[in-house]
Length: 353
Image 1 (cartoon, rainbow, N blue to C red):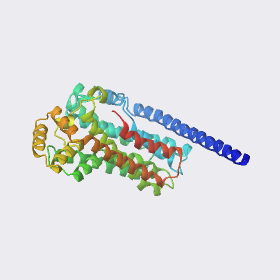
Image 2 (spheres, rainbow, N blue to C red; image 1 turned 45 degrees about the vertical axis):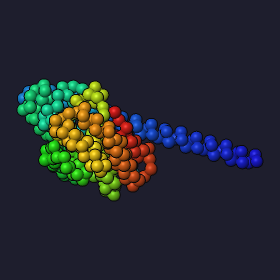
Image 3 (spheres, one colour; image 1 turned 180 degrees about the horizontal axis):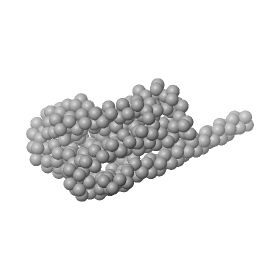
C-alpha cells in the first residue's frame, strides 16, 4: 500500500514537472516570436527611403503601417520558422524577419487597393488613405508598397520565395476578379465562394506559413503541410471576417459593417441563409431575402440570417477549417512552437474583430 502511495506521488510530481516544463517552453517560444515581431516592426518603419521626391508617398505609407493591425501574417512566418526542426536562430532569424516584413507589406498594399475598390471610409478605426489623399494617390501608394515588399526580399536572396510571392500576388488579383465577376450573384455556389476566399485570403496565409520551409535548409518536406495549414487557417479567418460583417459593430471592427452587402458581395452568411430557405421550402422568405439583398437592406438581411441560424452554420465551417489546419501540423515535430501555430488556428475563429 505504501509503495502504491509513493508511486502515485512520484507520478503526480512527474506530471507537474512536465506541465511546468511545457509551460516554460511555450513562454520561451512566445517571447521569441514577440522579439521577432519587434524586429519586423522596425523593418516596416525602416524600409522607406528619405529621397525628397518620395516624401509624400512615404508619409502615406507610414499612415497605413502605423495604423497597426493584428500582424497575424508575420506572426505565422516567425512561428512556422521556429517550428521547423532545422531552424537555426543565428543563421535564419534575420532572413525570416525580412520575409515576414515583406509579406506584411504585401498584405498592406492589397488593403490600400481594396479600400479604394470598396470605397471604404475606415480601416483599423482610422480614415483610409483614399479618404485622406484621394483615389489616385492611394492607388500609387499601394503600388509603392509593392516595390518595398520586393526590396525587403533582397536580403534573403531566395528565388523560391520570390517565385512564391509572385504566384501569391497573381492569385490575389484573381481573387478580386472572382469577387467582381460574382457581385450580386444570388446563385453563387459554395465551391465558387471557397475558390474566391482562397484566392483573396487563403493564398497569403499559405505563403506566410510555407515561406520559412523554402528558406531554411532541409525543410522542403514541410512545404506541403505548412501550405495546407496556412490555406485552411486563411479560410477559417475569412469565414470569421464574413461572419463579423453581419454580427459585429463598426466600433468593435474598426471599419463599417455591412460593406459586403453594400457592395453586393454574397458571402457565406447570406449564401447559407438563401440555401436554408431553399432547402426548407420557404420560398416567400427566400424571395424577401433576395429583395433585401438587392436593396442592401442590412437590417432585413441580418434578420434573415438570424432566422435561418446561418451564423451557427458559418461557425461550424470555420471550425472545420481550423481543425484541418491543426491536423496539418501533425507533420511537424511536437514542440512549443508548433503549439503556437495551433493556437493561431484557434484564435482565428474566436476573435471579435
